[in-house]
Length: 283
Image 1 (cartoon, rainbow, N blue to C red):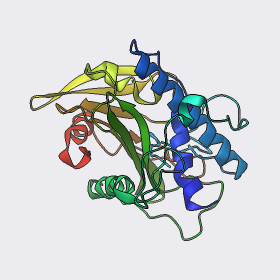
Image 2 (cartoon, rainbow, N blue to C red):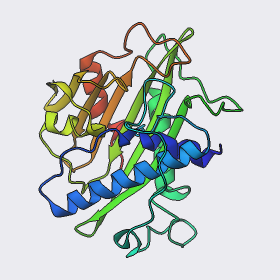
Image 3 (cartoon, rainbow, N blue to C red):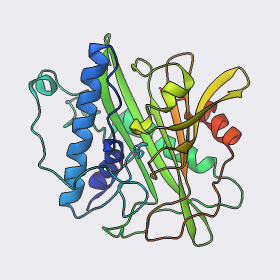
C-alpha cells in the first residue's frame, strides 16, 4: 500500500449512508457523484488488502478511515470499481500545479494539497494536555488504520465556483490507549444546510442526538450521541458567514487493535469551539 492509497482510504469512511437528497438538482447530482467516488475508493483500498475507515471524513480523510474497528464503510466488502459516467468525463478535473488536469478528484500537489496538509498540522496544534498525536510508523502495517492522514478533494462546481473539501485526521494517544480527532472542511459554495443540527446530521450521513451550542454569537450543531453508528462518538458542525463549513469529530476508539480511550478528549463546549476556530476555517 502506498501513500496515495492510504490517503484515499480515509475518504471511504463517508460511504456508510447517503443522506436524503437535497431539493436542489445540482446538490443531488453532486451528492450522488461523491457517494460513487467514495465507493470506488473503498474498492481500491480493498484491492490493496487494506481495511481502513475521512473523511470525516475520514476524514480525510485518507474521511476516510476504514477500519479493523471503529471507523468502517457500511454494507458489503469491496465491489467492482464503477466506470466514470458521461457527466464525470464531460469536463476536465481542476488544473494541477503542472498546468494539466488532475487525474481524478484528489489533489496530490499544489495549493489544495497544501491546505489538506495544513489542516492536519492545525489538528496536531490543538491536541489537549495529557494527550499526544503520534506520527505514522516508518512502515505502515497494511491492516492498521493510519495514525495521521490528510486529503484534499474536488467536490463540484456550483454556480461557477469550484467547491473543495479537506479531510484530515490524527490519532490522540494517552498511554497505550488511542482515540481520534478528525476535521473536515468544505469551501464556500457547497449546498450543505445552514441550520446547525441539520448541518451536523449531514456529516457522513450519520444521525444522532443533536444540541445547538452557542460559541459567542455563533450557533454550532453538536451530535452528542450517535444513533446506531459507532465510527465516531461526537461531532460538531458550523457554517461560517462566508459559507465555509467545518466539521470536527472525536472518537474514543481508533480501531480494534488498540485499546480505546477511557474518556473523550474534548467536552461538548470545547468541541463546538473547535468548529468555530479560525484555524479550521480554510478556503
